[in-house]
Amino acid sequence: MNAQTKLIIVPGRTEKNYLQDLWRYRELFYALSWRDISARYKQTVMGVLWALIRPFLTMVVFTIVFGKLAKLPAEGNAPYALMVCAAMLPWQFFASSLSESSNSLIANAQLITKTYFPRLIIPTSSIITCFVDFLISFFILILIMIYYSYMPTLNILLLPLFALMGFLAALGIGLYITSLNVKYRDFRYIVPFFVQFGLYISPVGFSSSIIPEKYRLIYSLNPMVCVIDGFRWSIIGQGASIYWPGFFLSIGVTFFFLYLGIKKFRSMEKSFADMI
Image (cartoon, rainbow, N blue to C red; front, side, top):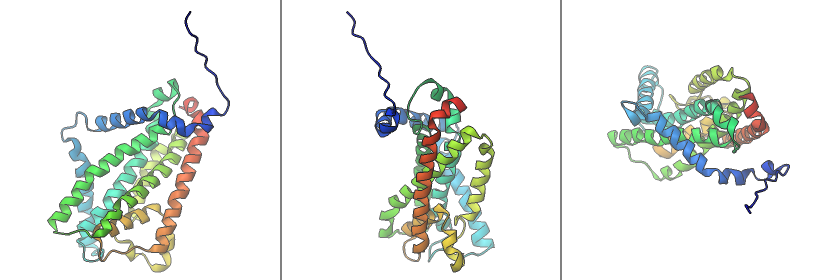
């Protein structure tokens, strides 16, 4: 006699065991992340060089425009190119994470409508893919430091902390936009504009120290200000400074968006399959 398997559906189980489900489906998370990474560079002539060319060219343009033409000051005694590169890497990661995660659920519509798994896996895996690009792009920073014979200080030991903050900022805002994009497809047009606008209001091509003192705290409401200033402080070391009141404000804003993003995503998660 064949043994019979009973499937018991317990109300509220999904809510109570969501973290356990995330762990149970970790192999799916690995598979989606690896799929996105391989698909990004598959059948491309230059392969991973694309992850180096884009931030490098942007850095060159910003250095010429802000450093040579506008003659804005650099951080401490650091070369202007190094200051821009130290900001360009976390910003590029943040911008690409928003772009990729916002469309991740729609791009995986067939997977979502066919089986259950924590939907949080999909946008998070797309952000992990962008983080791999970030790690590859870090090679540019190393080359620039070698070119200028610029030695890092012990501050660089705290660089992973600021990288984590950049990841949390991208995850929180990315989850919120992803949720809205499933229901309101207009966001696929809004996100590129938001990213482009954010590039110019974030201290990527210039030092945040040029912001007037009375506006520094308001300016720090941008969570990437904390991340970018932290990257520069870690890499440049002596001469770079952090505006500590704005720094702690940016941390608070980052965790606020993380909470808001997860809450919004979880509240809409059950209806994703129907809306897609």
